[in-house]
Image (cartoon, rainbow, N blue to C red; front, side, top):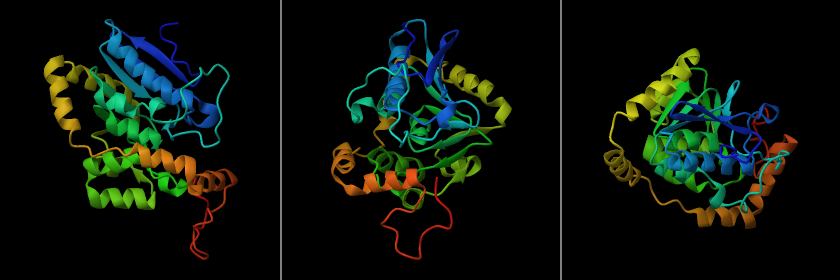
Length: 264
């Protein structure tokens, strides 16, 4: 099927010339499998090549937008085979560079890869119930996309704070810092996302493409080589993921400085 994104946790819905990519894996709190990451990338590509579609809105279900990758390594029946886990499955640069407008409608918990999706969309609109977090370092992952993207949005000092602490922050703080641009009451999120699409589509596509290209030059180098070397060779990501799954502090935390409760 043309609109099959190859992942059972995603669905594509057409509303006139607008496609909605809905993250819908409630049994795993919308955790993204490799097939789902790749499926979001396919949704961006589909909208860019389909003459009947003009824009893409990415959203979640329930009280979760996207919490990032499934650290349990699980997949679902019906997931299509994907390239080896690496930069080729990641949707972030496709979202950033999309000719067709991409709007993120952040309905709830938004962290890790979910927050990157929101920041790299053309406009990110959050429910006033949404919460945010960049927890990669807590899992031992030196995330290259965050290192390039987050300082461009919030500045170096705040990027250090958010990345090195892995702390949660609410929608009002996310907007104040510049991680997202708009916050609306929860029950107005869908209408606000459609309104943002209408606003963007008032601009001509070629001029919009050039403005986006110039804006995207503000991001720094995305050092995927270091990131994926660490994922393959360093013991820290394996220990971080194992500790998360076992609900215990990882072994790099000094004795007496573990949090009072597990970070999950």
